[in-house]
Image (cartoon, rainbow over all chains, first blue to last red; front, top):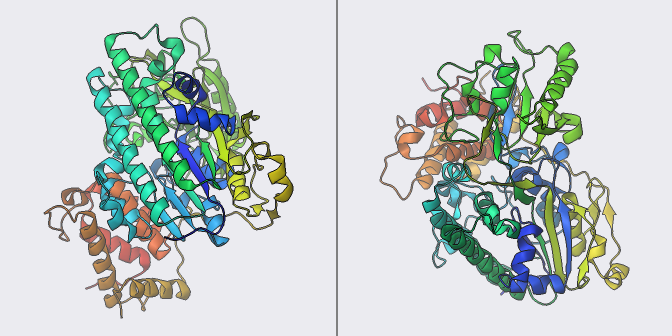
Length: 536
Length: 99
């Protein structure tokens, strides 16, 4: 068996984990190992990105910089080059900053990285990467090194369709399920997490690395549908036989997660440091859905394309393969919400056709639009939009122009709907959980303080903290600082924080207007084909 | 301006590479991959097509040029035929079209 050169550092990601759920589960004995972990280590709130969304927040955690710098704002990347705005799924090519995995690798360490977003196509690093959010057909091609896949496939119970992500299924499920489908949805995620755990276990045993990271994303999936059942303050309100059964099944999910954690800590060894983090927290969404594009239409900013149906099911976004850009008449649209996940409004800037907002009018336009949104109230006179943030407020940084022009924070922190309805505010059919900025940070192991509550830290502090744990210098461009209160004073005394001047910027695959290929690049194409064995 | 270095042999190599990727993606099904088959007919989902584009772009250092070339005519990605996709990759790489 291989051995690692320095004490291992392990990051366990729990997507959307929140203390409002975990604390009661530790108290009632559902997660006994986590309770022990906390007693032996540190615990604190990890504040997410301004708009707490999975790809943006995990990328901030991985890079130590905020979305305005790393350039990931949503699951998709908006394309505003043409008159009609479109979008495409984001990839690792959109990440404009170096990741902690890459920094560890260039310092000679090996890395295991499982199920993190924005990791496809995966970089070639020493260790093993299985990117997250990959469709099952692409899984075999996505694993680096590719030779690992045959070992993954041989694991007991492995099923590519379970491990990978079915975007259509996820989107549909996250918009609400009939009650009789909750059980299979939760069991599916228990099986999925087990698949990821089996891979992790095999790699920790057979390919140990100095830095190991795994993301369990079922926490988020369960909480979107079941937060109201997991929140003890709502137990009395939701106390039917069905609610009790689903609540117990959710506990079973968390019990399994607790068991995985216990095994991970044991496998990592007594000299390891284990960190647990979430990308954001959770809370209950309110009772209403804000149909942003309906509001924009009513205020003269948007025109629906012919034949766009009214949403009758209180959905947030379209099912299937159609983009929301197909719903608008772009000849008469100046502002639109393209995705539900971003809570963003995109202002259409005038280009060749002349339609849209001229540059000279942009500032006045967005100020008026933001003000109108803030004045939108429900029947009782309460404001629906709590805050409207301009690009430079929500996402300052070198990539901020790729962000939505406006980011809305709704009064209940819920996500908006991009669909058409007969009113901008409609009652929600089922209780729903939504993202909250207060995520979690926990640590335990060699050199970590025991039994301490530590102050709230930003999500950008995790990457420098992992590098510090690995004994590596921290790039000065990282926005976050090492979460030093997590470490014992004696450890800090012999392990001073070291900084390096190296630039963090990666080469993003920018939206380019043309590719000017020079002779060197053409040689590179031929070399690549030769390397692939297609040319002599 | 097409590149004279990226000639017919290079084009064949690119097509072979694409076919091999597609075969690996549908290796567990009986579907035949032909030049005239669309991605949907082969059994790919839209996300896999986006990932395929991402892999090709990364592989050849194309940034997002291939994606841009594919969507400029507003063709649904799933309806793209393999031959059209290969043609687009070659065009983006600057390979001379075959007569």
